[in-house]
Length: 368
Image (cartoon, rainbow, N blue to C red; front, side):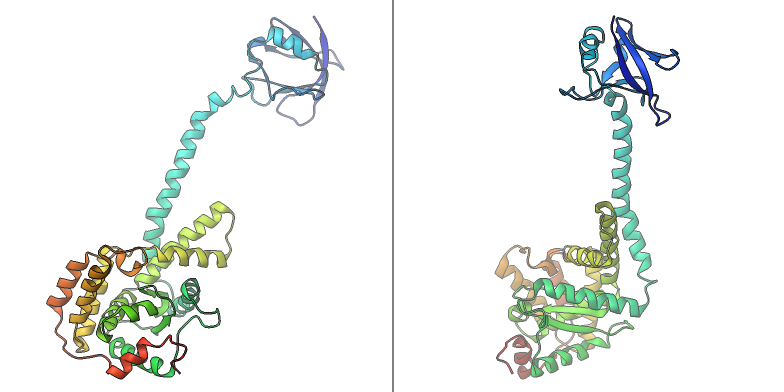
């Protein structure tokens, strides 16, 4: 039987004890060098290597059933005796079998908790928080988000995120004025055109509405654009954009905590990008449709070409491509078309031919 010098860590205190160990068929006996006191005996089938032995490195041993106890041996010749007497020495990860169940349970619980926060708690809180947000805070948030969104789509320089010509600005304002006072919204409504060929439009918090130049090119006439704009006014009236953005900002903040980035700027960017993929849900879309019909009727604007807008989309694209994000989550276009046709009572125009032409060319650089 050989004796080997070692250092013993009892797993309770950080201070090691200089010991001498003896290895035999019963296991490893640990005796204090200073006083000769026996500190313990590790049964042979409980002795484990902490890591694979490496030439020139100390051996690290642990006792399988006693968690934090450790032995550090500088003399690697002890490995011969250990292998001869300790049958389970090389089970490096034997302790994992005793811990995988709690890891799985707690990991699953954490995953369920995160899912609950994402899909239940955050949407409910966002719905309630929308009524608590002061108008000036919503306005500031909306302005920041609008610039972020425009920057994602604009084909112009960062200094020219929005289209503008004198005649086009006047025509757009005339359309907005014809619709604005028909909705129940206390804040300021701002409508701007983004220079991109994507057929899209959406409302943002704070009454910010972005029309894409591709929609102006695609629309048959000014009344179709007015219908789309009235629909976005419906979202503004019901504060749908703020609710969706708060939900996504909450999701962004949670992701920031999980990923280690909780800066406000990162949350705004992430929430803006999530907003592009957000769905209001069919109930919210129908609410916005109902507002659009009411606004068009009260303004005396014919809704027929707005109804035809859906048929035009269907005829041109068949199904709805991804870039038509405005319509991809809405109720079926045939249903909406029939509803608008059946409910519209207006017969008038929203813009003169000259104003419509000016609005359609608001993004043309040579329009001045």
